[in-house]
Image (cartoon, rainbow over all chains, first blue to last red):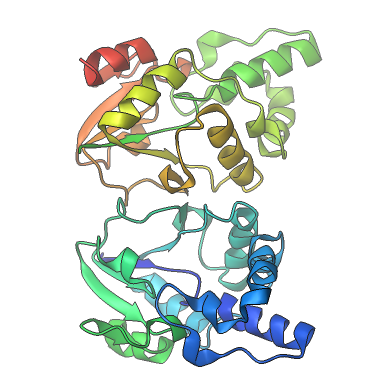
Length: 175
Length: 175
């Protein structure tokens, strides 16, 4: 059974969407999407609000209520029958998110078990046949097949096979 | 730089010691060391107290105050200069332990960073040159050099190179 390593944030969960919704409601202000580039999504927010956004990101509960990416639940349910799936999140940077991420995953994806969740800081020690991730820093160290999950911050990245949504993932992995 | 994958519980932290100390004080009763065998350390405690011991294990805070294994701090400080170290704990089964384990590690081993901690359910997707672990279930899937860290529950296991304490680890890795 082939092993697929799947990222959490911006791939099956939508923290960026949750942050933008929260921010625009709280501050009656618009995020500048053009400024969100690889490694600098914070730049979509005005400089004077960076601290607020970071505090929100580190706060307990933020990762507990994230929206689920469209079709991820249905597509992964079937992929979970055919592949060995691990959900691998570089979450240790946000210690308050760790239990939230466990609880979120098992609530929205009840067919996964705790055995399939990995919370790490760095993904260079993870091995598998395929990796689906929105961050180049994770894909570069991976030895298997690399799939870039499209996100606002990676729009300009070239040279990787992309997955734009979970219907496209189904077309690749469930054909 | 060679990569060493190091387990947390029973290797650098002592949850068994903490549990026995707590239990014997709380119940004025002795743990039966002879009954603690591979995969059944719970059998060291009387049947009627298994539920209490499990509740303690799952409770918030239990993993925050564990004793550190002798010499682990000093030996790992030097190993951390010479090797790429990851502390990998199969902790996701205990969601309340996740932040506790992060906070514990960075308090007692301040030279490690959050990038070096991995909290998982299963270790079969972890790759490295050496693994130090007290559980056969983790060592069996590992492709590199396997080192069994001696614990009460693995006394009868044969066929593995053992590390009995951190002075022995220093003799192997810092010679």
